[in-house]
Length: 97
Image 1 (tube, one colour):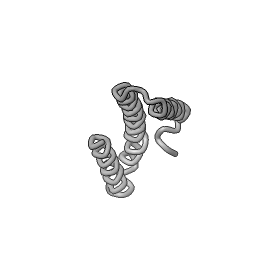
Image 2: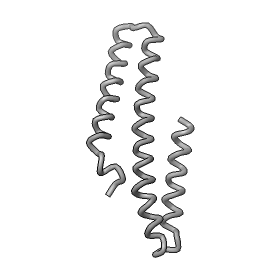
Image 3: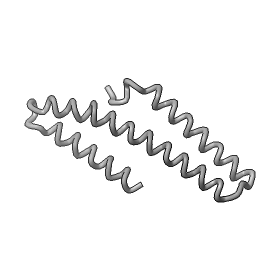
Image 4: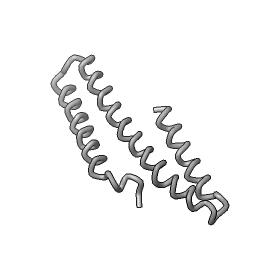
């Protein structure tokens, strides 16, 4: 089970909106819209994707990492350590982007 299973439809809806934004940006370029206006829309789409990523990260921490920590007595914490390292790497990727 994935961490976002409970709100999968919301995640998909947000991604469809971003997809629509990106198609709109493509149309803007095809129609030779002023570059600053295109950049404004690129920024909005980027922020929307970042919001999806943060939501997925929150779901991962609240479900996957919590589950690994709760069951860590079975394996001396190895699963919890792995999930925490995985989450840290995901956070680092988000911060770099």
